[in-house]
Amino acid sequence: MDDLAKQFIENNQTTIHLAIALLLGGIIGLQRGWDAKEQHAGERIAGIRTFSLIGLLGGIAVVLAQEITTWVFPIMMVSIIAIALVAYHERIEQIRNFSITTMIGILVTFCLGAMVVAVDAMVATSLAVVTAFILDNKKEIHGWIQKLQEKELDAGLKLLLISVVMLPLLPNREMGPGGVLNPQEIWWMVVMIASISFVGYFAIRIAGAKKGILFTSLFAGLSSSTALTLHFAKRAAKTPELNNQYAAGILIACGTMFPRILIYCFVINKALLPTLVWPVALMTVLLYVPAYFLWQRDDKSEQISQPNMNQNPLDLSSALIFGGLLVVILLLGEFLKNAFGDAGVYALAAASGIADVDAITLSLTRMSTESIDLSTATLGIVIAAAVNNLVKSGMSWSIGNKQLGVYVGVPMVVSLGAGLALAWFL
Image 1 (cartoon, rainbow, N blue to C red):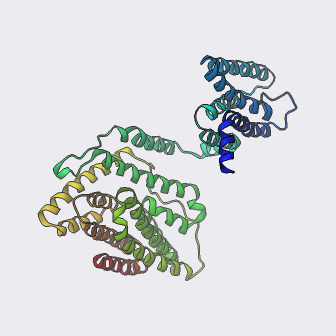
Image 2: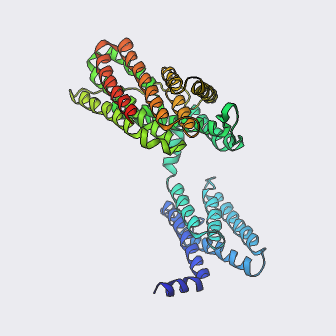
Image 3: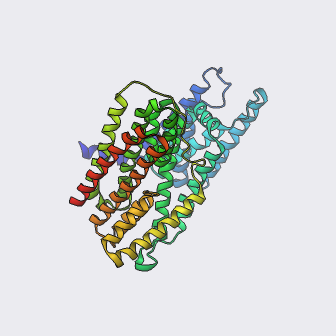
């Protein structure tokens, strides 16, 4: 039975492809027809029948181009464009609507029909669905644009610049002392950090103020748990009756930092995960559980403003500084490893963790692929995270109030002590 089905498909491949091209045109035409359903017959430029035929025509054009002459395809495409232009001109004389979305949809449908026959039917089908989705969500897309701030658009374009433009141009080879510097790998780490912070920023931007402390804290761990700690500590100093909620938020943000570490390791060196996942999981749980109980102690709640994570979601100068910091830590790590062994790496991790945990985490993860043991990298990362979270505990005490410091500091110490002990044991 399977052989007969395969033989049928092989013998009728062209017919099947043309049928798919017809259906893909129908998918796009269904959306266009639904969008213009209030108009009378003959008033719209193209509906489900027209788009279906255009998709079929794209497939036929490729078949004829293969069998007769390659000139068939461009001639038929130009003909479709000419017919659409005439229809658009007549339409605009009656209704002053300068949108050319339907015109572009016609061209896309023709090309998708051609892709079914000449390229890949699955790719063409996926693109047809995406096209229909974009056409169907006009109001939502325009609403997003209205809400978008100039700095956020600028940040998105910069993220594309440093990823799809700059990253491929950098040399992908080992350089520097001990070959620890690979420009493309270092910049890839910068792009990864920027992308995670970018996602965290927009998660809070979209729904943080509506969802309150818990939602904001969860996604602040992707952007900057330090900035979140500072923000909540300041608010706790003014409203100490909400210490439970603010302490829970800080613990959640600091706990979210640990899964973020696992993301770095998964991308850069998966071999580090078996030794790192257990200390990280233990520390995360020992922060999330106290946060849950603190939150449940009373039912007070507050709708908060978005913490100032970063005035610019993606600042290129900050990305360059972070890249330079990575280079410095990689070089220092190699030097201290050669001069003092593992103790030098641990000292560097502790010193780096005072200000930032991302740079040292990425550096040790990168070094674990070549120059240091997995166990050394694991303990170094845990040490950096421990120091970083202890700094946040101090901020809660000194900037917030004593009670907030206790609520945050005790779970932090327990979590970090358990994590360090497990990392040392492993």
